[in-house]
Length: 116
Image 1 (tube, rainbow, N blue to C red):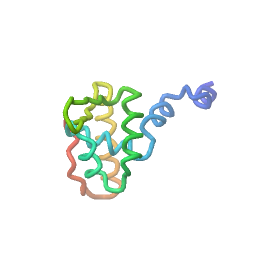
Image 2: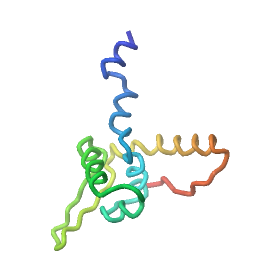
Image 3: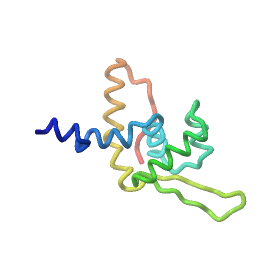
Image 4: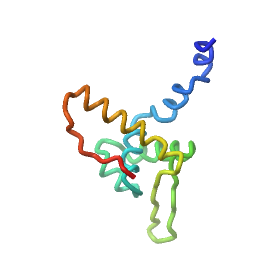
């Protein structure tokens, strides 16, 4: 019966991976775990991501309630992204992924902090 539920998209793992599994989504969340970011800061921190892809991922994560978009009424417009409470729930998962990666790599070569 459980296998049927997972095949019908009621699997909790499949649900979360559907949200986080898009290319760049986890890395965007990783950046936001250390503080609010503007679009250009995310582009600089994520070499290889296009501004179009970044915009799409940010909109998806916002749509799912993981991040908040704050627009400041300035010229030119100033937009910042931050994690919501729901977005912060990803932190223990990210820490576990980092620890597993370090174990599999056999070293601790990532000094990136995931403390909010």
